[in-house]
Image (cartoon, rainbow, N blue to C red; front, side, top):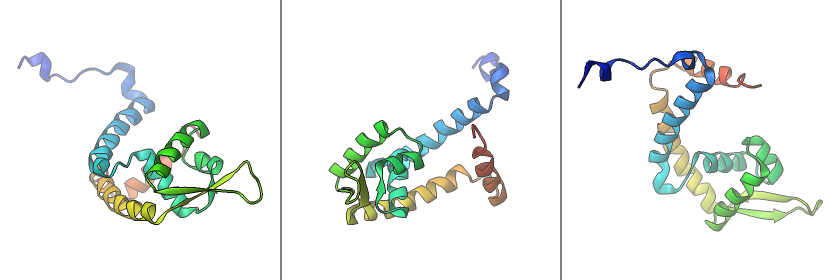
Length: 147
């Protein structure tokens, strides 16, 4: 291997950009997540939706979209897929016909419990070089990005 191939690449101004480092971290996190949950057919977005619905049974599509930071137009096809898999149900609102309330089915709760165990292991892998305090600090700092 030529010496030039072993020399680190100069990233120029990228080295100081938060967005660049977030993207690199996101790629690593998503790759590991997908490997850990591929056989269950759970993506980062679907896991987020399922967990928010578990914690907020009966949430509306708008409230759910806001909570997981997705457009309503992105949430609807995701909900369609999850509903087709029997993981959730939409129930028409009795007070506002424009809204549906979404609840997890028993199958959805079962899948979520299994996925959560895998996500916990994934999280341990991704943060293995951080102390609990560093992890807490990182989560706090990320909450300030763009906010």
